[in-house]
Image 1 (cartoon, rainbow, N blue to C red):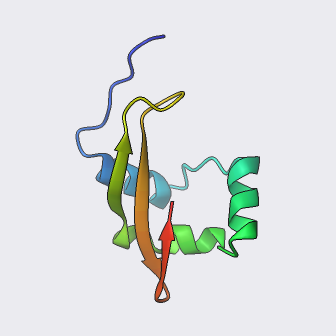
Image 2: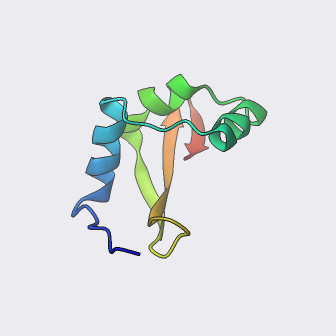
Length: 78
């Protein structure tokens, strides 16, 4: 497997992808959102509040991040 270059500022990179609509809404994600009563728009609209709270550099396919945000007084984890 080829090494992937990680962004220098992952939070800024994530926020930029969200603001540009570069999001892959997988079946798994959609089911999780549905069961937790979280609208996709809540994730998009709260991007200014994103905060990386965990980093998983050796995740299965690519490094990943657990992001905390707040939308209408509700905390969400992405």
